[in-house]
Image 1 (cartoon, rainbow, N blue to C red):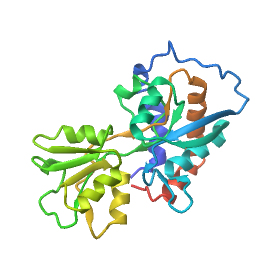
Image 2 (cartoon, helix red, strand yellow):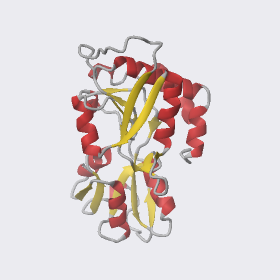
Image 3 (tube, helix red, strand yellow):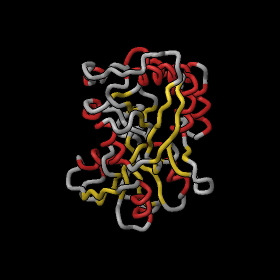
Length: 260
């Protein structure tokens, strides 16, 4: 199996333009034209999506793979970043209006979103996974969800995939953790979410829930940047390429147990 960083570097070099046709260049200019000056940026995140972003209950600090990655990118890309915890729907709306300049929050690159804001080069492949109760023997993959009660977080690609399941009753949640709580309590039959998040919740509740099947989509995360902020986007892509090339990315993947 190819190393994740090798796959990502290949994407950056040859496939990162997949959605570039969706991103208009007519409005995408900014005033940050001094490439030598450090740019200060507030990066928003919905810190309810471990292990990528979450609030440490002891320190109340925002932590996770995305946070560490953004800090490493900032160091390489001559950015100074601070983080702000923002609810998912408000985060997406704020990106679209330009209220927020940058967001890193397990955001899947897709054509609809790329019409509203810019994306960095992709940095992680996180397809959708199904989780069920530990004692469930009837649901073996996403193909077995017809007629079932299926949960996902509102506004996510998991929710979009859940809505495609014929005959399923889909319940939406503001936070994915609430969906998993209802799954463990037997109020729903399955949760659909990004594979790394599914693995994290299963590992934390190994006696109550399990993942079934394999990831049934290919979805790449990207750092989101408001239209008009092309200098910031360029620095993010520069920093991302650098942390992949020097091995920092692989170190963070290992730290957060995200190896495939």
